[in-house]
Image (cartoon, rainbow, N blue to C red; front, side, top):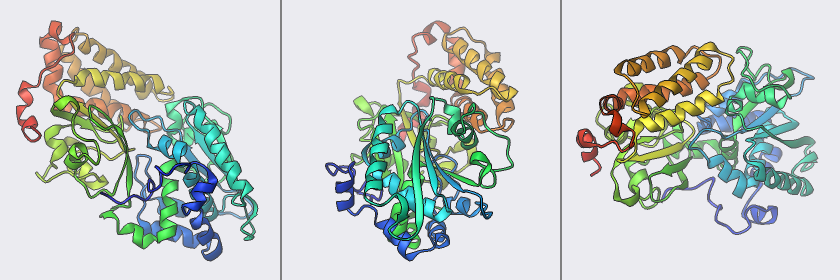
Length: 450
């Protein structure tokens, strides 16, 4: 069984509450950081750990912190991105709902390192019940001296505030989140300037997601060097994976990124295999925005090696034969699933969630949805597939924020790896409407997991 750092105590009865969390060793990292380390030393430990942002981009967290501008007399802010809206991703919800003090503890240490005296949790609007859980945890922490003025007698002051969003996926993009937090429409900003220089209310700001900030706790407790020994290469530490789809054991799992994709899917410790004895067809390993891979490429890299559950291995070969770790939303599809149908569902989501600022995204997502619906209904033409490819190509890289890329990549990967399935929907229009696409021509791909 892999080592657990974030979910080590998630099954302890009452861990949601302060007394139990403290009894299990909670807030030790705050004591260590505030009493024995300078803010720069905390940042250095995070840099040494190799921790990469767990929200999707995978940018080194310590390096991001070091970019923060520190002009005198100007406030600095830490904003936790809890706007977890990527379809297939729900691990941040799990942390906040069941171990809220872990996030609060990580925020205190991170805020100390960044020089923030007011830090914010911007939470997805649909997570309405978790707002009460977080605010209760914040109040407990304050009552026990971990928040407020002169924390632990060190002279450091910090308050944490929770702000509920209105359910817009676009606010998961950090600058759109900051716009919303300021009370404005959640539209992404043009960069530069970057938030590290001019963020919340024009002040230097760091935005990290829930899992990233929670991981600061074991990094400070154990030391950055020890944390870096877990995992492999640049994929250090542990990673939370939200697993769902056609598997026997959907849920949130903590892995150390040294296991293979095949082990993760078929091991009883994790997903427990494909539901109802079906065969694996494909998987979207990092949330809805990352490229889908068929079974043969999912279990092997472009070099014919076993594909591992880490940043480097999943991306091996580029988008031609690889994908991304992304947000860790692991969506498994069995042999009965229709890729065209699922791609349409994703395109519909991204069309709905586009803020409309950029023409390629505003118009392109709508056209992709229309074309995919036409193909799914058995009313499409072969030229529609080429048109879809052309549209996604003109969206990618041509928008202010990554939502355009997030909408384009699933379509590109679906056509790249399952083009014959799209063509089948054209040549077998009547049968396509039954949404029961066969897998006879995927025999080679299925052999590896038969």
